[in-house]
Image 1 (spheres, rainbow, N blue to C red):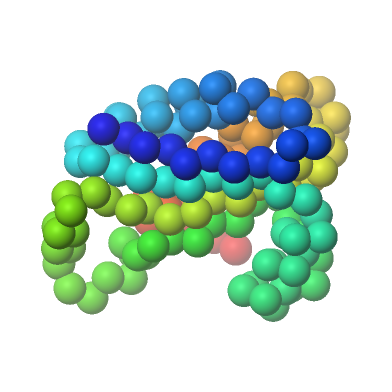
Image 2: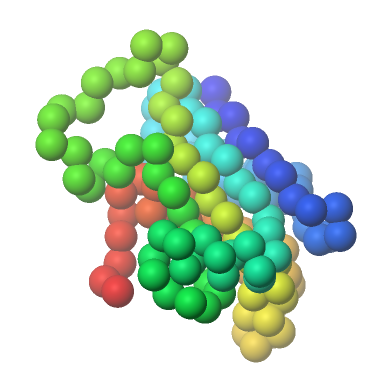
Length: 131
């Protein structure tokens, strides 16, 4: 069972079903346990504030992920959670940045959001890229 918690501001028109299905499909190939992840579509002001607070960069960014536990830095073997659910963490996508990137790449905004969410999901799973 994969549970995707999804939140967006009402003025950001996104295809919730497409995004949730993409995440569910991707996770079903990568994890075999009950899993939960949170996705939020937010504005640039909040994204800039989060980026400044947690990454010390005074600018906006397209996606941030906040892992519940970072598998790449675990010092001890993974212990199954008591309720049997793997809580991955949170993925936040800047809607304005997604619109901008979609325009630059001649893509649909929802396709760009899916790509950003899946990128954030990789980070939650411990798959990182060089800065």
